[in-house]
Image 1 (cartoon, rainbow, N blue to C red):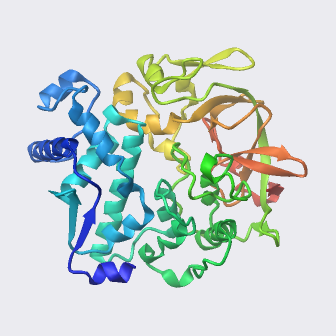
Image 2 (cartoon, rainbow, N blue to C red):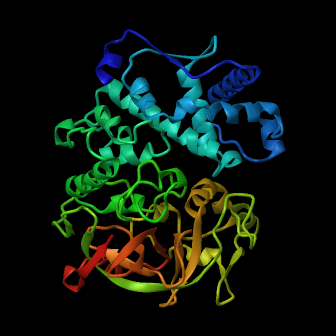
Image 3 (cartoon, rainbow, N blue to C red):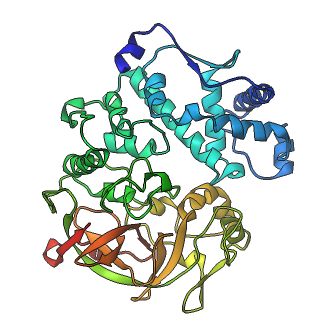
Length: 432
C-alpha cells in the first residue's frame, strides 16, 4: 500500500461530506494562519474571553469553535491506514465535500488546539496531537530520514486509530519503520492476541527496555475486553488518555532480564517490591469533576495550596508535595518540569503538561510514607515494584500465584536505588 501512495502523482484525501460548519472551519484556519504570520509561531489559546478578543478571534461560546471540534472528530483522522496515505504521498489534496483545504493549514490549527489550555485534556486536543504525529511521519518520509520513529513510538502514538482488523493496528505501521527487516512477518492467520503478545516480546528484545509495560496494565477499552491478553501485553486498540510517565523508548544495552512462558502468558522479570498503596484520592478528571470534586480545573484554581483527600485515612495532602525536589532522575517525563518554584506563573507556563500528567490518575500515600501518582484502576493493597530494564516503578496486584500489572507509578522522592540499578538485590517477579 505504501508503494502505491509513493508512486502516485497526487493523493486526494476525502475526509467526509461538506456542511455549513465546514465554512466556519476554513475561516478559523485562515485566522489562525494570519496570527502565525503576525506572531511568528504557534498561537496558544487561553480560556479567556479577553485573550480571544485581543487575538481577534471569536468568543469561546461561538459556533465556530464547536464546528472546529466536530471537524477534528471526523472518523478519517483516526484510521490507521490514513497515516500511510498522508506520509507516503508527495502531493496531498484534502477535500471536505467539494471544499478544498490546505493540509498545512489543517495541521497548524491542530497544533494550536493540541497545545492550548483552552482545549486541554479534551478529546479534541488528543485527536489534534495525533494529527501532529501524522504530519511528523509525513515530514520524515519526505526527507528520507533514517531517523524515523521506532515501531514502539508508532504504536504508542497511533493508539487512538481504528482498524477493522486489529492486526492492522500493527501491520499497517510497518511501511513507516526504517529497518523493516527486523520486524516479525505479517501473518493474518494468527489470532489477534497472539500477534499482540509476539510484538510485545519483539519490543522487549529490540529496544532493550521495558517501557512497553507503560502501555500495558489494567486499562482495557470495553470493546476490546474479548482479547485474551496478559496484563503485561499492551492492547494497542485500547486508548489510555493518561500521558505515559516513561520516556520514549530508545535502544539500550540491557541484559536478557526477562523470561516468557512457552504459552506466552507469563512474563518473569528481575526486580523487587518496594512499597504498598495504603490510601488513595479519587480519580482526577479533566473538568467536570469527580464525586469528591477532584478535577484539574479545581486544583489549578487553588494553586499552589490545592489539596486532595486520601481515603480511608481522611488525610488531606498538598498537590504540590507530589512533585520532585530535584531533577536528579531524568527518566520520568514528569521531571522535565522545573522543580524550583511552583508558583502561579510556573503553573501558567506548564498547565498543559500538568493536565496531561494528572488526567486519569490518583494521588496515593504508600506504606513507607511516600506520595505519588498511580493509575485510576489502583486499589488499596496494590504493591509498588521496580524491574531491571525499566525506567519507572509499576503498580502490581497479587493474583493467585502471580501478579497482574496495573500500570505506571510516580514517586516524588524516587531514588536510583529504588529502580534496582543494583541487580544483586533483585528477585524474580512473574506477571500474568
